[in-house]
Length: 437
Image (cartoon, rainbow, N blue to C red; front, side, top):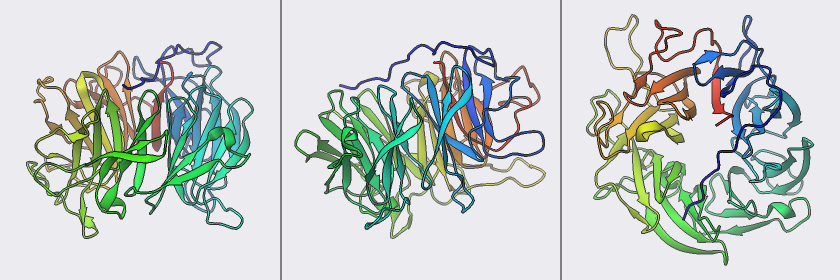
């Protein structure tokens, strides 16, 4: 039913670093001898490459890898008046900034066509003559130039189908979905709207692109009920619907989802009356509210977990499945439990949760268990490392390396006194992507 993303071989060409398996990490600050840019790490040995950072704007952050792995797209912007809003196209083979475009505002979402020829960027605050702000900008990845725009008021998030023939756009405080035809951008009649949703934020597509599974954020985004709603893309009608609620409770939530086979995992924080409402049932924590992980079978459109899976609260933005069936869940603006100084063994809690999806124990992690690592900060990047039992996580501006057999920081022989970290890697890091596998 589901189309998997292929693992194309690495692009040929000269690599300045000489590394075979690279992780790109964005550093958003310049301080001392460290410059803002894209840092390179050997993802096999957890060692920083002895090369300069790739320039990618003043405050590089969010990244996306093209399907053919030839390029990495980087956005630089901090939401202030001095923000450069630079969208860079990094050539992975030469490890250099090949081109860049200045966007008309901030973005938190961009997608790439399946043939790696174009990027589409949501800019919710971009001025538009005669109507409310908001555009989807099309950028050629071969020339590094803007080829057109589709006007979509307040568009915040984008999802693209498997063929690249449709993009779904999701706007803040809206119950409609914008259906965008990429080939018509800049020509006319590129956008149509379909209503009947509940603060939609994301979508996944069947392998034949006939059906979209739209994630409705619901109450957490100012709506009513978090849910998954089928959208028939052939005739633009709504299909089956399932509320993303824990069985036998009224707690529903979902701001980010991941599909594995026919199972959709959704993470979010339930809200009631405009405030978080999920207790931290089963967790020994000073936090008074938590979030939920919910599993939906897309074949039957039913919730499959029979009990609440309690995770950290906050606005959830990242889901990634690592080795050994460990699901890494990241949020921002969660309830932080900060240790006293000096630490006395008290609770430390941030925005990262790890869930064991397996039906058997992994190491000492029981099946269906949730681990909250003792680390503070927003989670802004998660990257499982292929062929290894580790996951790179950017939390609170630092790169942490987790061993998926114990759901804790790995032992790094290159820095034995600093588990889970890389010697000499200093900065305020935002995102991480592997570019070779």
